Length: 419
Figure (cartoon, rainbow, N blue to C red):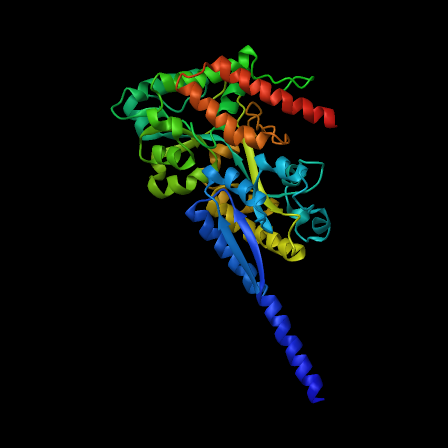
């Protein structure tokens, strides 16, 4: 009997040790102090519900995240769960590095509570849920009411021509500029959106897989952005600006217009009086349409994880109603859960611009071609280099368009050939 008790106690101690040694690694890539603190809060609840399990959060700075994460993976430092941007999904899913979440979604009590769009986009690669989106980032336009009034501009621009005219007037004010240009990391959305708006459509490819970027109407959109910068309607150093810089440029009053997703509200609402700014739909182009980009991000499980069931429990905590709504309220994305639409937080005036845009049949939410395996490199490396060269006059808009078209044509035709 004594031996049995001793053996039982030893087994219990060993089980406790094993549980205490269970550490999940979670990589955050769209990083900011606010997001990291929110993530820690939700993860803390997961740890409390799963005694003996610890989650190590690794936060990568967004501007360097693509290269840093690729380096981690090549060195064998693969996490269990990661924050997956839409632009990386195809790269990692097509290389067999992501676990299918389909078996878990089949039995999850909240699967039916996800929006249809969230489930559709999570299954963007091979119709398989390699990612569960937590929210959406839809571009709309912030404008500074005080600066507009000071410059004598009567209301926000509704067309691209009015946007340029307003930028010109505002840029004549000392130390002021019309537009917060994102010339550095993450700037591709603006170029894609304005090019499509000037072209009057958001079809990036022809039926044979050739890219439309080198076609005259699309080149006009690229020229439009370059001209804004060269005419001094955006700050000179905005050629290097990323997310934090453009948002700061807006709330400090350096520039009066900013195209951004709801996540920019976090910093802006803390630093500006609500009466001094507003959010409106993006201006329309010559065809009477606008094509605001809609992006998304979510949670993925790495196929190399040794703790898959536990990793799913972590994803379920992050993605469930309590975790998802807490996360999106703090980071500013539009949630992926149907229940969030009834939350009073999203019924406020600050979100009106995005919901007006979603309701406008001539404002067409545009998903970039993230299904291409080569798109991650294009967005986070090639596009930054070439757009900066064009802004600085080292290459022409036509040369930029030609480089993009060649790269994307090869990627699209490879994709079509694989189907």
